[in-house]
Image (tube, rainbow, N blue to C red; front, side):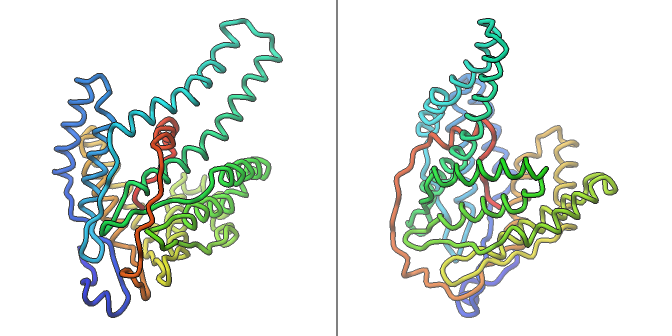
Length: 324
């Protein structure tokens, strides 16, 4: 991958991520994971997930050093079991009990309201738990990442955002999405150094409104351009110490990536999944840079404890986050 070499980057203040993995290597890991997951009736799934993350992070380089992942399959399995007990079983009982026990209509309605309320709380807890766990298990040069946002604050932000987005028939979405991203970014740390974000949702409002108006005429294709602009805006308003991230992704490039990925998956009946993952990572890194002075040597270790329960919760509704 093209980019500025580390010595030159240190002088002019441009730093880039690079990825050295390959679809073939990831495919080998994937095949073994699928086989062992089937043989163990699903139990190995958690260890397989760890293997994929460890490979992807180990193949990611910044300033000449690779990242490392320290999570374990045992942690994910225990977290999953806790998530089932705390959220899975109560939701299942609320969903099936009214019909099985022949509850009166008003009690059935109350059960539906409770299910919705639990789900609305479930999602932000899963998002925060996932980010806290994954960052706490990721390191670079021996220094751990961490997330220090309070789940209660994010629940408040999330519930208010859902309500306002519903009341405004979706018009509040860009503000909600920006506030959500800002919370997750500004409470993320690398060692003792905090990340920050200064974006405003109103900056995306008119682009979002235009995408809504063009949805039918473009058969929905306009959303690729809006998504690219949103991701570019989020990155361009994210900071780490005195350095600013810069994304040069465009809607056209993003659309071509997703279209070619879809074609690969269709033609290979899904077998190209590892190559799609690698293509997505390389795409993100190619159009992303960290610009400005940065004293990496002055950052100290400040690891934070985190459990895998939130990580497991995200698996129910796919609310986790990934590279890019």
